[in-house]
Length: 159
Image 1: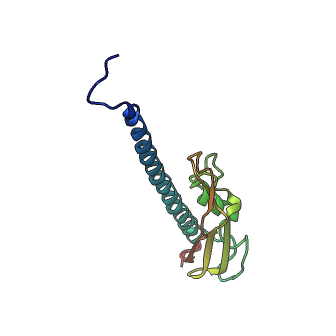
Image 2: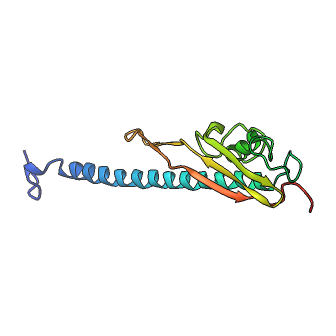
Image 3: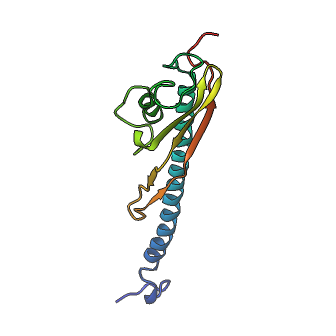
């Protein structure tokens, strides 16, 4: 049996073990960066959805006469339309949410003293759970509440 004098018999497979350790560390770091990026994108998209829905609510025509300050569903556009703007980006119900797993039930809309140039509308996204894509992690995190409050702008009435 001829042995290579440059390698020792105890070094067989050392390169494979070193590669396995290095690859595990590299892949763990790479997937960690990807998942953090997805979580940050979701955070930004949820904040944007709350802003978009509040902007839609503040600029749409009120369904009550000007000067009548009420709260609830009949003040501005329908709550359903506002929720759809937050979830689907359009006032009518879509098929695919802009943010995965975001449901209209996660959106809360509050009007306060809403009328021509007065009052506010607040859109809040609550109870959104972020699901990690990497199966090894396989966990979820509860995202914070996203809230946007805007003052009434036109309320659909010409001054």
